[in-house]
Image 1 (cartoon, rainbow, N blue to C red):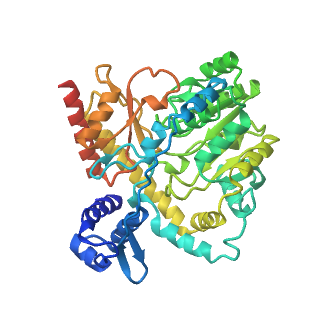
Image 2: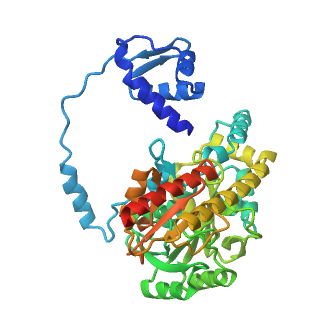
Image 3: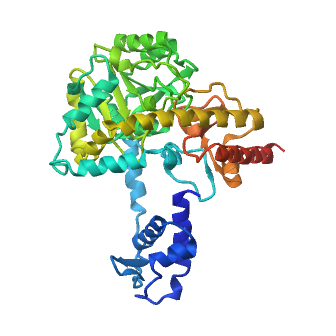
Length: 478
């Protein structure tokens, strides 16, 4: 059972028993709860913290937990209906309404109910995260002189240098800004490069979080179809010509959701086409450190072969480590770097120094290489387990491409299988999958689902999840 499931179940059990205690009454000790419910001390601590956050219990260090005094409920609820008029009036004056559908993002951020197999996650399972190495890095970082002081707004020089070496080519530390992960970096890049109301070219399909960021900035995402070799250059060139766009956002390596890798000829063409259009390419290199063991040599980032400053490069340490290690980088050359820097400073000042120091300690430790090699092996095995289970039990779901990096498979549904009904039916059967619709900025050509294999405990859980998905399909087609 996942730790978070145990915490939720224990919190629910304790909540149901609170009426046994009078206000101010003491709950059983942590040791008694560990023995009674057969859970770890960490689970007890987290469950009590959850109840304390809800105002149901009060914890006193060294004394225990007590039922909280009942709080008086506010009788006046207020009237917020006026906001509908105001928000609608704002939308009427905007060239591109900034209302945002965050469902595609929330699908990867929200934990499913206990007992549901998580095929819709966007992060590594806790067993794959380098928790010990991160804890040790954070401890060492906390002992560094000045660790809690104000960092440089661009980021720690040593961390910027590390990111520059990772990107390669002639990218230097002076070209790098440290960011609070990949998503804020995308937001900064789009706000810097495209004024509200203008088009931005995107791969189709593409990452829903990027579409949400673009729309929240008042931009109009324009899809450019991609295939197993990445975006199609002839369609990209036509899209630049037809729209006058000055930005193209892409994931050249292990694209989300398809897993495609932009081939060598297309890599050169994309940069050449953008340069001819006077446009920028935003390269989201989110999955480079999620390469599978059997992938072979990887192409270098687009930014490493771009002396003219066409490419704005984004990467992050979050995906190969933990959702909470939100440290990433923006790399750019030329006058655009100053605009990126200004927007980031205005939005967030800087990334907290302890987190930057911890990131430096982590990537500089021997544990870092061991962790990446372990993740590479595990992702390969999980991908093989999921692809094999799908081929055996769900052959009607088309899997046109099996990636050698990233954490997901992209499946096309038969025309007779409604996407929304399948997603809902799968959840009823006990498996959470991601609907394909949020990955398209316009009408999708067919129904799809995305299945993540990184957020599960292992091959056995994958087999069970596919079995449950088979049940959902049978209910819709039987």
